[in-house]
Image (tube, rainbow, N blue to C red):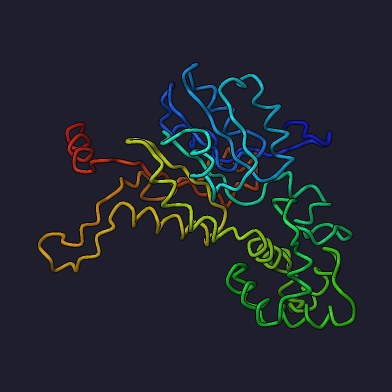
Length: 333
């Protein structure tokens, strides 16, 4: 918990903290990147494991997070560089700092507790009078309000279906369009009411909050979250030094599927038919998936932080020579 630059409390419990720090297999003199810096929770514990020769690069697009992390990481200021950017630009950020490779990267995806609990950010469906914002980077001019009032019914249906995975997506899109024909939807409460009207009363009584999936879908669309993740994974793996690890915490199935598929592809990129006795496509493995199954929060963590319930951690290790790595592993056994 830290003060941000505006004097508010930046509250965000670092999910799967111990598992992530262990998963990074930190080298005391290594270089590490926290691509979703947030309040600096994971980064603080990375820094605690570094010697004076180690270094941490923190990247975040949220100004409030930057302010909070700067305070949190002050004891390690000489080893920390904080950059306000999107992790999709990690290669350019590192190039600008003269860094060719790193020993570990961590991503803690999704929306932070602080963002959810700050009504004026517009991420939460639990506030009635909050503006329809949902920007993770307030330098962007496009907001959730533009999507809600500007997208066609078909476009709204697509994002609610694909990113919210809501079975009532078609009806929700129809009700949003119907509501905005009366007046533009400007607050989270107005959007929530339109969504509620699209869902049968019996479902509203038994399911979770009826607006949860639609808000998620709009947030993902606005911030291009899945595209950013999908387009960055190969780059991050390429930036890892030999033995370096990429640890990614996801919070819903769409993110997890993307990470799982990318890790598998980088471990086994061969496109040759199974019937071929040897590989002729020339595509070489970039490393090894450490987590065959995702690491999940413990019962103790769930009791302390219920929002960690959907979290999954997957880990990939870069290896210049996978055969050498497998020989060493088999020898250890």
